[in-house]
Image 1 (tube, rainbow, N blue to C red):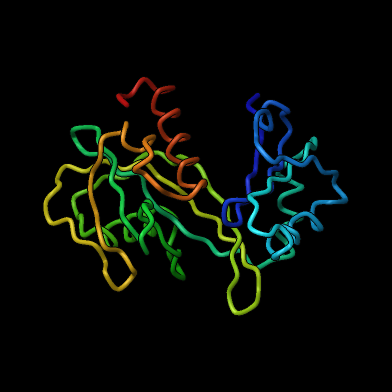
Image 2 (tube, rainbow, N blue to C red):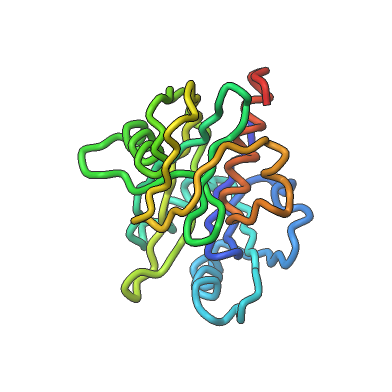
Length: 216
């Protein structure tokens, strides 16, 4: 049975809820916590008490899903969707949003399912329109402040394939200034400055492709 893990980012810090000790090995600035310390640790993470230090709190428990759901009940959870889009050269599509490299994603609209939202957001943010959507890769979670409240965003990620690279156009009104396909090696280079959750989902997506024997 695969380990269950939920990682909730706030900036570069995180709360990790898992049932596998291997998940927590080798993480810098890791603080182990108990069930009764989860909320307190999260409050530290989302306030100035970390003083800019990227802290990670790790919670080992037998049922990470139940623990996460109970925790998430305390917050407004925003649903979002996005895509890892590969072209015929096995390059991956990315965007530069507000000066940071990112993957195309956005909020799910009312009466819209995850797959439809993922396709719409990719097309709107990149200008690409000839894409096929396939398997779901997984989810990422991050917390952020909005109007003095702390919100949780759950983003659902899907693998997509593009038959065309023409007409790439950044959605400038969303702060996007660049759109490009790049070789996979570039995503592990120092030039790819992005969020930890984006590095996580790219790694997860490539691992799933390797497991299926697809080209990566």
